[in-house]
Image (cartoon, rainbow, N blue to C red; front, side, top):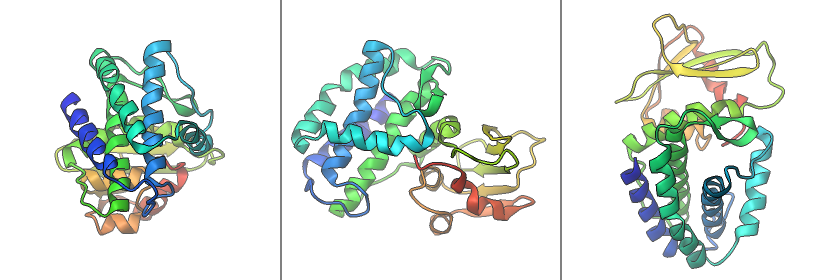
Length: 256
């Protein structure tokens, strides 16, 4: 995992240092704002390491505004942002090395908690997916390695309950299973106003079973693409009793 994070961080660093900071194609933020946002993510890890806590959004709907506020406070020229991010690498790596086996006790937005592995997969996803945003802006290729995306998707499943939209009816009942090459099938079940995720069990009866590459699954879970775009990237519905529910699954969540 550490090697994958290092590779993603180095790729991100090389890309952003060569990018026009004002470009914004394919994202709500300019390249400079994207880099500032990634830096604020690193600041949260730093604050947790040094103080045992960090500022978090209180509700799922508040995450976007919280991110915007923090990135505006961090704004600086891209070389300075990249230098600050690089300076935090060793401290973050030490934290990851020491927390790999930590249970689900690390605080997250909206009252969520994550474990030591998800703290790492979440950071890997930040580097790769926002690197993709920058690459789109400057019109250069950017790979999302399938193995990396499997790891990121595993973490997203753990943080999913923190992003459930407020006001979801307790009567809502949607159960979708995901199959990606190289991984065990996973289940996401919305019911009784909560989200349950776990490896699929023999007695599970999902409404829909989706087979798709890990890169497509991760972008779908992050709401970077919709179900119809996902079909063009390898999504197939391969089973289930109410397959149409898969088309509205992500409408129950705030964008990550």
